[in-house]
Length: 443
Picture 1: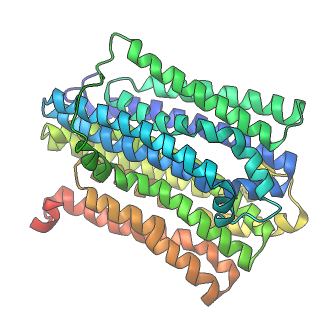
Picture 2 (picture 1 turned 90 degrees about the vertical axis):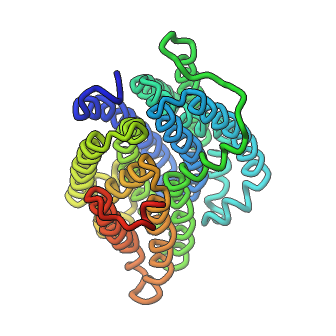
């Protein structure tokens, strides 16, 4: 497959099937994981997963920071015919991925209880969270490297292997969940063991690429100063997941102050659904990114525009489908994830329907981040990510319940996603019309 000469639409949909297919399968595995925990422990299990979610967000964020940042620069360098620089970006990415993996394990391991309290846990939820963390802690580097390997493998012409790795790891996770949660009666601790085993298997499968003849990735001596470029370029996408963690902390604390544990359990379900939609949106961005990066590096503006059009179309189709599903089936979704109490079932449909409106705009906002990174407009990408993930949404989470009452807190996401969508659409249009000002061109 030649990213510079093959027809854009068929190539894009081939990458899309592999990327979103693996994301969808990964999401299904996440649903099964959460459903088993929720049905074993009840709403407390869902609340514990909500408290734990910032840790997942941090690990995923670090993987995207380096994987997307390095992958975009790798693709642009190849598009320009600069193979030496491409391999240098790969090498620095792998080195600092290893360093950040070790630091993540040490920090979370030593400060687990204060961190879980910061994330909204109380004396009831923290024991469940620590049981879940006890095994996952040592598999967090695998979570980071799944994103690093996958990003470079797609750019190296191997979009299918990441999907195979995710499917295999997820199948092991589900089998382990059933055996360890129910058959061995280990509960949430068993889910942690199964998840860790699945992450390890996924990494082992991804590493098989380096044994193939088609592999062109190799480690070389490189300037460590390249890390600054990698982080700068990957930061906008990483902010999407980092912000998910920050928002989870703000939501968890505000919900416990204003509404209580039942509402937190519903929010936990909402974030699980949002994570599924976000993973599928990442699939759209990851399908387009190698094509966009290499063709932008080769100055093929027409091919970049065609790929952009494909990404926008699929983003809004995904967003509409997700929003309709949540609006029509809130109660079945709740029952899928937990054995609900009467109180939880009474409040859940309203919360999920409001929160689900954000799904209309979320996929495009994620895709736009990948697009602007791929064409080296990282400041626009960062502005959009920060606004939707931290600045605007965070302010609304803090202000809405104080001004309009507790229930209004769940409007924070639809309002912020819709606002950022308008902002990003404006910049996409200006970029494509060639009417961006000189200052914006420098970005």
